[in-house]
Image (cartoon, rainbow over all chains, first blue to last red; front, side):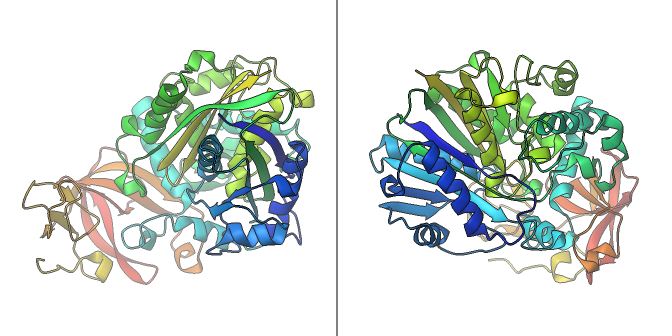
Length: 378
Length: 118
């Protein structure tokens, strides 16, 4: 058994002058305090990576910087799925008795620490060095390819995709830590600059500075326990050229395994936090996970299904698309927000019922997937 | 190991794929073994250069000065007649399902496969 006992999140956007370690430290401090623990009680550390400050031993660099001598520590790298992959590992580590309190931390000054071009170029390297990167694709182009095919097979339109950007922005407006605070419309998304068609600027998440952290513990430390009910992964490919058919992507495999591991059904889920690097990512994942029928996710957005008041509140902090994306920390904000919802501390964003949550992360080009169910126990 | 045929990744006007002598599977990313059955030394074969468009994305925002000079350029995934999928460039107006044929064009200091309607 394992519990998420504390969470910490910085605002996303510009943190001029903050290093990756600064942002990780800030989030870690918040998470440890939130769990009601002292630094000395943390005996495990898992961290992600920083494209701005790459290091072969980031976990020990961070542990030394932060002032902890853990009995277990290393970095994890699965692109955008890193946050949930670390959570899954922490869950198994505490469950197996390897550690009592594992600090999971990610943070990066991706926006102010390097140029946008450098970020875009660093990320494009997830492509094949000989057979893809030489052709000048970008991360939006990899997802643009997937989008074109998905739209072709399931009749999804650019206006449909725009709905997800509008929804994430509407949610971000209610979170003071979000990178964007100006409302947008479908027309704004449609009129935004083309990046890698069919994806336009507002279909893409921004580059951000920020940090996020949580503590995963063997026992709950507060009255309300947020328990990891079950989780699973699937890795079908690395490069988009080698991706399987749309009907055989990893999200469907990971969710099936997570359901089997947890005994939870989609009908039990009361709120969701799903990776949304691009509007197409969110649309596809919602449908792969069974939170909407094929080609029907946008209609559900229009009907209010995924809003704060809807039947399945989704990314109520604004997601990567509008809260922001600082790399590993990016999707960790989804878990922080879910924890706040489940412990009824989300303030004006609070949803009616967050007793059971589904989280899903995606790394690479729909390459690596982690699905996770959390439940509240009192 | 069979002789390596030069392909576009090495400056030649050719697409080369691998075909397994043991199980018959084809693969595009070159390796010293077949990813389907594990048999060593798959045969190298030149592809015909005819294909069907699987997906497209017109890149309008590039990240380097060399690639920016070519904007907009169309990144495509095509299914080759021989049964493998590859990434390439293509005409900006290509649509999914179009039958296409390869030629080679300079891009950012090298030669890349470029598909046009057959």
